[in-house]
Length: 281
Image (cartoon, rainbow, N blue to C red; front, side):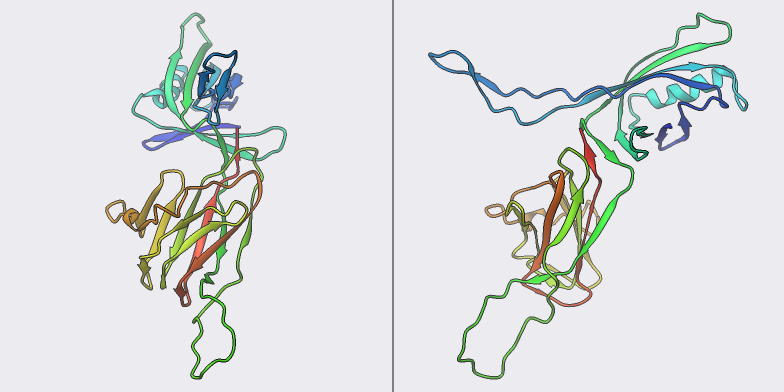
């Protein structure tokens, strides 16, 4: 199954024989490599610090015939609607080796539809996937209870004693079953103060030491767009509260990552929901 979806258009399955669409070739391409190299002064070879890839080109070749519900021209018009330069369609396809559905966000690049046959038109279409990766169609979610950041204590102690109102269970194991780093989104629900999300595998943290989140509100932290908003409102950025000296944006490496939500203070129902998609190159 190869399916295109986009706002303003009806979904289109590119390998639907009954509808009159026969996919003859489906090429996922390969991400370009963003070379970062510098010649060694006075010596052979280069310094190569390449670590990132770029976009990939995705192409299909589809034979279009009159189907059970539409004419050949109507089918071509439907398909080429996903090739308007202003549109950003999503392609979903089922991996025949695993049965899982993967997805990519696309930008149109090129197409051709030569009318050389009275009954069949071969349409060739190309899109670029700017992120260069494929992700699972399913969004995974884990809930992280807050762990307190209060320091330890030693006797003697003088009553009355006070303790943090609420602490959770610590780090949660998060699994990215893909083969490439996965971005994540965290929704941190109040009431809590000085929240942080930590990758315990690497020690990297995204921290907000001067921020308080009220009961009924949540802070959305997006590692891909590197945005921080209150209640997912783009007009309510809280990016200025990020601890720029101590924080670094991290991703979920392939395999297991232990992630912890910490807060200086937190009371129920404070929780952090971590959302991600498995990611493949």
